[in-house]
Length: 176
Image (cartoon, rainbow, N blue to C red; front, side, top):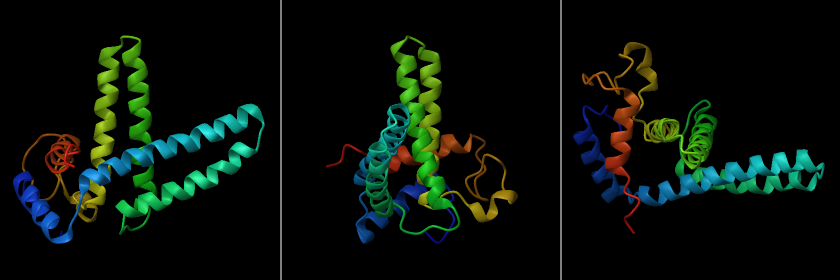
């Protein structure tokens, strides 16, 4: 996307055009991100199991899982600069962890805490997409209002909320 996005409707229109010309399938990409989140979780569990049991075989499995995760992440993140690759991985990992903690809070009837954690998880997930779909104008961040998606954005709602709306409009996981 060469031009800055002026509003959500313009973004959705551009995305629809990209889907037609570039054969994008973000519903599959969304499924892939959930798989990647789970692979990060598997890496963590292999680490902790190796540490708790003293069996280095668990550590050795981390490499195999990591290679699968890297291969899948390359399907979504085709171009990046600096540490966007690692930022993206950590955004997905943090989103996954917050969902896990939120689910545990839900189980013990701490619904308010659970809902807040779920909201934070979704904000991080939306930031992942915003960053990788080049919706977050990192080149002009210092010049923007803290809540603006770009220099033309005059709406005062929080940026994470705006990105969340974009993700909802663009990614429909129920399309098969």
